[in-house]
Length: 125
Image 1: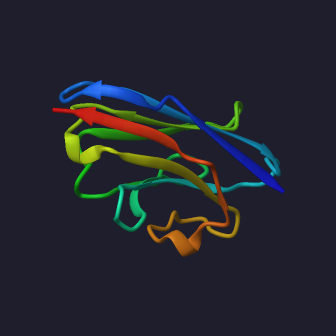
Image 2: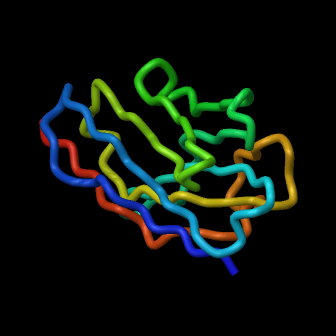
């Protein structure tokens, strides 16, 4: 079993920055891709970013490209999401996810086996 715990959410003004972290525990000896998704009130969960085990493959949603950066530290079993130039429309609960069956990170929620509990990000205008 895998546990994912997010941290780093909070309230920030538009134009500000936050760094989210997601620590994995449990089945960490295997290679796995990781992703970040978000869900705003009344909306479906949507893809934000994903990264392969090596870190060479990184994918972003068009809405965050150039502002967000995903990275990982496999020695710490942790993935990060650096969020810059935040906008009010970035307000959502952010979830990290892990997929042990893929080499290339996916963009769909159904491709990920494990999920964290989420961390709230609120961007004020």
